[in-house]
Structure formats: C-alpha cells, structure tokens
Figure 1: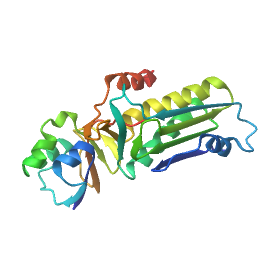
Figure 2: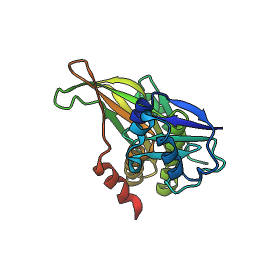
Figure 3: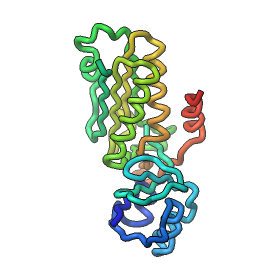
Figure 4: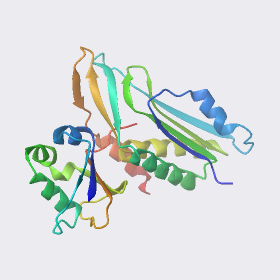
Length: 84
Length: 154
C-alpha cells in the first residue's frame, strides 16, 4: 500500500485529501503514477490532465517526474506552491 | 554551538517581539537581527481573506531544510520561521522570518533566502475569499517568485 496525499486544487478535484492504494508493478516512476491515476476516473483526470504542472513529493521530499517510486510510503501530489 | 532553528506551522497569530526576544536572549554574539512579516493584503479592495492550506508534516520538514541551508550558507546565529494556516483576514499576519547573525549583511541575506525558498518550495497554497463573501480561486504561482529563488543559484 502506498499513501497518496493531495493538496489544494488537486485535492478538491479528486474529492479526497488522502488515500491508500495498491499500485500495479508496472508503475515504476512518478510519471507512470500520474498516468495510472488518470485512468482511475474523471475526478483524477480533471485533477491531473496537465501532468507537467503537478509537483510531487516522495516521503515529504520534492522529486522530479522521472524519479522511481519503489519503496515510497507517502507520495504527495499538488500544484506549484504559493505560500509565504 | 549550533545555531538554533525554530520552525512552526500554526493557526494562531505570532508576536514579533516575543519571537525576537526568544532568539536573542543571552546571545551576546548576535549583532544583527532582520525580521520579515508577510501580511494578507486586500488586492485593491477585492479580497476579504485568504485560506492557507499546507501539507501537514512536509511543510515543517521543508521549512526546516530551507532554514538549515540558510544557517549554513550565511553563518547565521539563529533563524525562526513561522507560517500560519487556515483563514487569514486582510491585515493579519501570514508569515514571520527572523534571521540573526553577527553582522547585518548575513542577517538580511538569510531572511531573504528563507523567504524566496519558502515561497517556492514549502508546501503551502493560498485560496482567495472575495470581499463579496464568495470563495474564489486558488492563487497561481508567479514566475517572479521562481526568478527570485533562482538568483541564489550562484
């Protein structure tokens, strides 16, 4: 099981803040994960239709989309940050 | 000694003077303290409040990473960063950064560096609440903030 955490408009469009899911073995990288999630339903499609703008953190550390996700406990998906 | 790093993510307001006192009390080596306070502005009367969302856990972790990088890079004597979450009305505080050093340039640079990375790398998002009471849109990231961050690459 991998915990997925969604924030801001990604969370609003998927209609959940976090969920635990089992990922198929074919999902190896962040990019694979984004493609896989998009196939789960129209909420996911609405949230992730422009994958290039989605920022990703593995175990609370920023990563690029080519990062392998093997061993990840928690993966955060969110828009570019606007705090401060 | 290791420079103290204080990081907090909280709903409640903060008190500038007590945070400065906490950092400088009994620390004779500190010769400069620079503070930055970010407030919720009304955008020409259009806004009533902002909703600040954060990624619990990662927000603190990322702010700590940035603060430690600032301490190392500018040889700071201490750094404090406090970011609020939840609804913040126009005129209220959003964020506080305090950088302490032996001399002023390091304190100015440390506070500036902390804010530039906090805005672009710490997981916080702002949603607008309009003056007419309706919930508005999520604020979009600004290229100018990325440019401000990138100037520290050299």
